[in-house]
Length: 317
Length: 317
Image 1: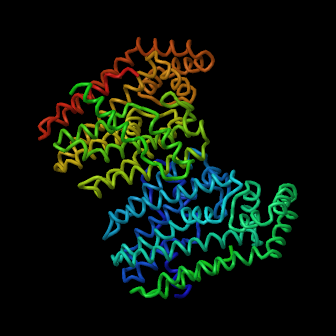
Image 2: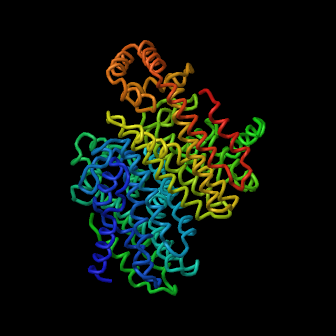
Image 3: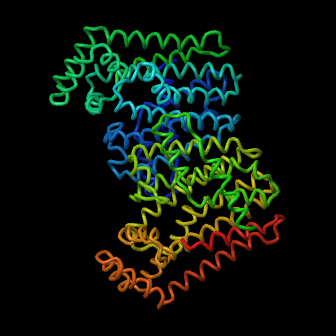
């Protein structure tokens, strides 16, 4: 699968996302349009299209499911940004910053119903797709709830953390693949294998995100890192560091609160010298291998799906 | 239909609403339990049960749909209370007051997915029920959006107002009846008539609410009235008053901002002496008659539905 095809898929999704909801009150149509045109990598709907196509379905037939997944994802971003007090998303002010919290809550709620309406256009297996979607929605809420609970919990284990990111990130990627499989109407066993593949990709993706956040020099990453350090947000690397070197990491966090650049340099050095970064890299690699093994012996053309894992892991921000 | 039966239905709903979601993170299970046990008249799910029974379905079969409607209704309350900055609901602190805004947003989101999961248990017509539910969800969001837009719009007409309350209140009652009809699997024509009946009851209910808010002496009503007057929230009676006696009503609102008791007395007197209260009463009566006429010539035992309109209109708070 070449980048050209990915770009073609992305363009198709971007074009289809414009003017998706134009008939309602302005205080909904405007922010919804703003969010859906706000950009993003569109990884989830691309996964839906790739999965459906790999299983033999036409791209056109899987578009409603793909759009539904992307709208669901954006719903979570709009609401999470309020909770996390993030003021920038995709290089533009978040909805609650540009409008207000009330508009942002309502924008998310309405987007959810638009995503569900979109899913009803899916054919066949629309009822099954709704069930999968609703399950995914609850998982995302539970993941976000755990993420917030962890902020004030100093004893989060790696297992608890993995469960949280599975719910918050993995299930939504799993849902994206599963809906693609449902469009293609493949056997349940194949569908579940594709879902599990995507869930594991999601897990690897999140831990990679944790690593990039600390080690990337990109400005965007740096910005969210600062608030995450201050909120003591749990990440794969920070949990490992806190469990193995509690004193050192706590003193580095205190330094970061006063002088961010100094503090983060100490944290990076510690993670490199103690092998915490290397452990995380190993975990990501193992998880990707585990994901790819879900595709083996599957009566599906899995070449493009393997390329998808490459695509997702090669990003650097 | 006697009160005993209504109470029996209400008890059934209250019992079924306890322990509906116990397996998730505490920051979700606790507030969801708190909201669902927080009380309320349960009018919407009672309407679902009555409609289903009137159409020949068993109460037990219509329970999942009834619960789904009540959870959807409570989702709107949790999110609306954040937007409207209301701190008390059903005589207890609202979720964002007792916990925080983040918890309240997530509680609402999770409740929505629980309501949808509940609906999947409905049989037959589950897919059709989902479509009706999702349409109702969007209507409720649009109604709330218009309601907020109207706060800063001094030229809202009665027609615009009726459209807003239909979306915000009427459609949810319509949905409650429609799901009951879907459980009973009646003809579409009957289902739509029952939906329209309930939508009109919802319209009458809301205008009656507007009237009670100004003329009731109950403490609860008085409390929300105060914030509504200050926010210049549009109601049926205030729109009429502002359009016919703009100067008098504006001066009364100014007085109310400083001395609430004085201001509200002037507003009440004006509405009584100019016939605005009587007009609203006439509108409610006409709307109820219009609603009841939807039931005529319908192959449905509509006695209990007529009693439902009585029940809803006889309340005094």
